[in-house]
Image 1 (cartoon, rainbow, N blue to C red):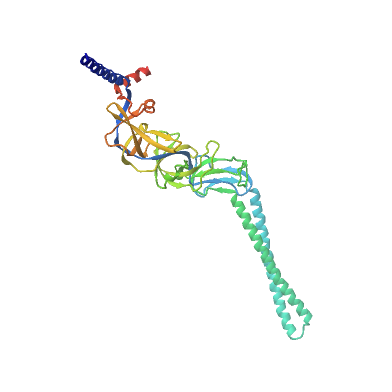
Image 2 (tube, rainbow, N blue to C red; image 1 turned 135 degrees about the vertical axis):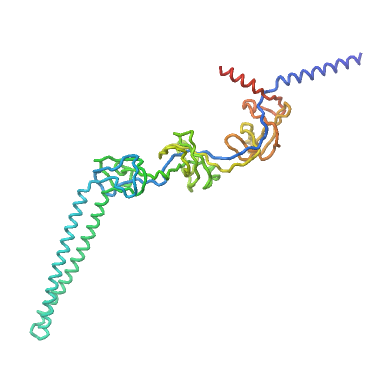
Length: 400
């Protein structure tokens, strides 16, 4: 009887194990699996900004007056020294003529005084001889001497007045020249801020009339992006970058980091973080027609291509213990239908893959998704590799 009970118990145990295994297989969650593999990894930092001219000038006037002529329009190509605008020069030109007349009058007055001085000097020479022969009294000779000295002083005074008149003439001519606005650089007129007949104002403040036009060198176009303070330590001058103008999302351009701001920009209304301006020079425009002010984004590569063991970023699970102030990264290995939790050390990453520094061996099978399952997996959970064909059929049916 006892022997029969033992046999029955063994049979029941075997049946229970089979049922448990069958149920475990039925309860196994379908997951995607991918092997640890060596890939080219290139870490980068993304930033946004705007295109601008590195060599750009905003033309303004140094004299106040109405614009009498504009010789360019937006988009025109100009050369250095080209006349681009004319300020009404009637008043400055009249002042030049007035100063020229005043200068000429001073020159004539000096010539006249010099002739008088020559006559007085000749008279003094004769009077000196007469005085030496005692034929001219001392008072008369002294009066002639004083008159000669005064004439010499008058010539010096008139010469000083002439110098002053010439200086005023030179200043008037400079003011007249300032009414002709010349381009200081070769480039393209990117904006025209005034019209013929409007008043041009000499001012450094942003008031109407203070800016005539903006001229930029198209060969000096670059992008200025805002890099978060947490990433700025990884940015170096000379690093390669890929720049995309928002208007041309499918035409990336090649660039290099040219300059990194020393001082951070203060927080804005939309962001509380500090940022640094990074200038990226564009090497190859890839056929894109660039315009200053156009929004752009840049991917700055902080490392070169490296062949490293890596996994999809989706496979990384971060566990954070705030009380202990620790953060650990894990992956789940696929071990014959069982999920095995494994701690790993991370290296660099790109947009898709994360390099693994330690914790895994070549060929390890890793669970990469779905995310809803991966985030809730526990060490030892039963899993099965998803049937790709079945998944595609399900996805197609769901779409229909």
